[in-house]
Length: 121
Image (cartoon, rainbow, N blue to C red):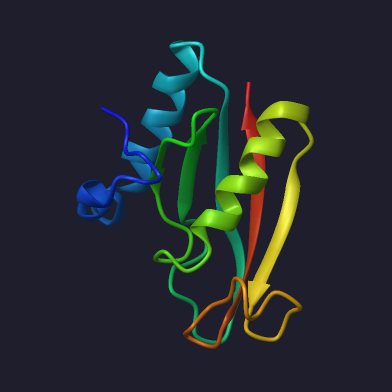
């Protein structure tokens, strides 16, 4: 069963998944014919909630597994991932308290993260 972006009951599972589980889910979802994207933390500055290499896998129906920020920016990453699934163009996203979206989406820890989002083909 996939973890739904809107299923609070599964939040514990979301945070406990290993990177291996996450990448295996991406592969399995793709084999099922789902559109899939993987988001990966590629750089951090200051106090960041997740280390470089952390993954979040997202499917076309907003099911997801993993974490790139401990919940701070997952919603925004999922939204971008849906565009990546649709158009195939990877994106680099950056989040932190100093950017123009600080009041909408930001990291409460005060750090910054850069995330690479790519479609799984």
